[in-house]
Image 1 (spheres, helix red, strand yellow):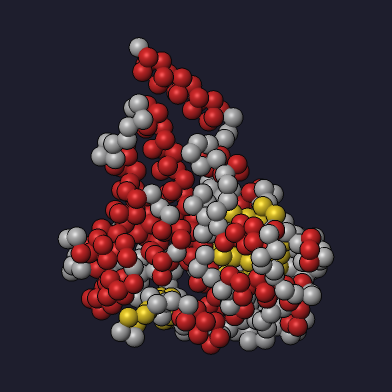
Image 2 (cartoon, rainbow, N blue to C red):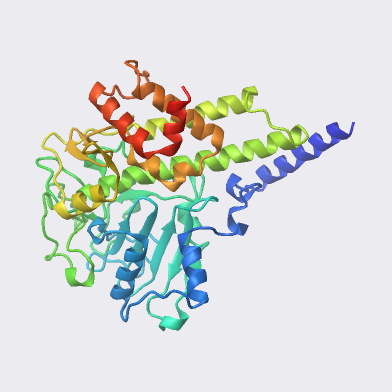
Length: 424
């Protein structure tokens, strides 16, 4: 009888949460908004509070560079968005775009005259959003955890968790999206023809058309051929206001891939941990991962992660290929690990983005923090794929060379993968 009442009360509580629209990330065990942060930014702020660390810089631009150096983010990763589609929309214009810089675990945004924004993807709870006012006196500068970001960064477009998104819109000459024209959510499966509306794009892409570098003019005219294959943004902006001269096309595509990876991993973690929490509540604190419900969940989340990891839904790179900046390609490859002269970060940009279709994001904190049953399932399935001649119908057909080299790289650099491999 006691157990029956316990389960009844739990069902009532779950129904109450659903009725009032509380998302999984705000419920037990995540408690996102109340959770204690544990990431590089929170540790940096603690060190600054104790005067053990400082971020040097007498100007916002210098402070931004110091922060990027602290996080290991190259300035060559710079992309520029001029549409008014973020929190600092009042400052953003085609002449004053918002810069975004990134590496595997962090994203940093900056609008000249405004705040520096940081997304830390190395926190066990989820992606954490911060702002830093570079216009304050150095002793008053502080990373502030922001809840306002969740107005746009926690919805169906981010898989119902605090996450990231890339929008492609049709902006007017002031950068205001023309809502009646619609927009596109950019993911790795988006064709290039639908990408980058409201963004600047530098680099070569042949005859392929995209929506970047342009806005709707008087008379509702939108010239889709304008702004192609730009190598220079000096006719659009004062490049001296930024840390790099362009908005690299390769960096844009890499960023879009890893945003999809981050969202997929953290959504799997948040939702599965909620399922386990409810399972324990129903079964007197015990959890059975072989139960039908949890087993199905593990398989489903693992399959979703594998699809992103192996580029299952990747749109074809335009027939003429993509050529971005040499600086970004150099910095991006240098940030990874290689074995026998090969790396999962090697770019191809002909028909597909990467030479080896096994994502470097397997080394990210978002993958490391996955619940053990899901991570174990992903690694076991990945090992089977990379060491056999068989391919799953739902996943890309990798060549034997791709499999061999990805397996060798992981075997030598990824401890969890190595553990799975040696146990078989």
